[in-house]
Length: 326
Picture 1 (tube, rainbow, N blue to C red):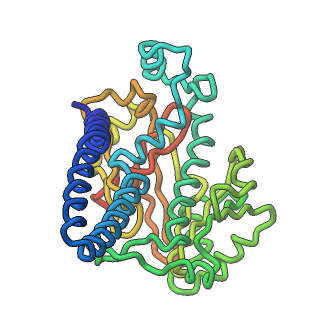
Picture 2: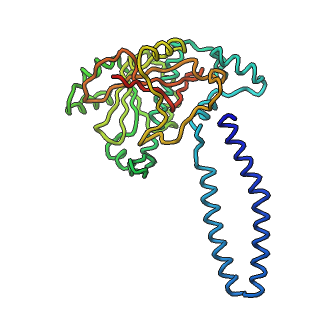
Picture 3: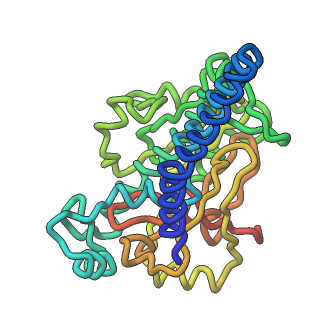
């Protein structure tokens, strides 16, 4: 049974139990309380009050779990929603055209060059999603507890992404800002470049309306710590088809990453025993290599990270692949 169907089955069983079994238990308890109330009125009143409080607390916790606990396929499901099946299309036609690389949402087949712009916007959206965890104090520490990070976001002017209209490769970007602790002045110059775009939230109009159609640009991603700044040069990212990614995997060592200590902590799985291409995922991949401000950079032969793309150029936030033999 596929993971998603198993989850639906368990939910169905839960509904049956809640609908039929719990009411019967409730009637039985009510009868017993009535008998107790007739024999001992005062104790029965206190017992009823205590049970009511317990039920309210338990019900509240259960409702919280139902509505706030994320599925183990959360990121996968979010990606599938971005390229939905039209109602007037059969499942067979939907899957066949997905395998051929069709984007149902935009009603077209994208070239790798066109997908690059889509993927760069989606990759930026992933950074914004990560930032939101910091703004909402949902970053988890080593002990599994949330960290109070929002104040640091405000204090450092961070937890945002800048798109800088400039042509600088990763190597030239490092040469520009230098190595060591004295790099913030150069980074601030990048942030203050003419026509720079700054994104804080996914709903920011300048992000929503930006198609990332610039031919050359760099990205600056700063979290709550002003010393941790990730830079993406104009050669940071490249779209690969399935065959190209297969060759890269044979030449270098990549491992799947499905969990992070601080962010993206939701369990993230791809449903087992399915052809992901039939769902419009895995025909294309985005290879990404970034640099950290202040650290020495050596251009790798292959990307540092590889993300799944759907046929519309949307990035699967997690899981992804990471190169391990630097």
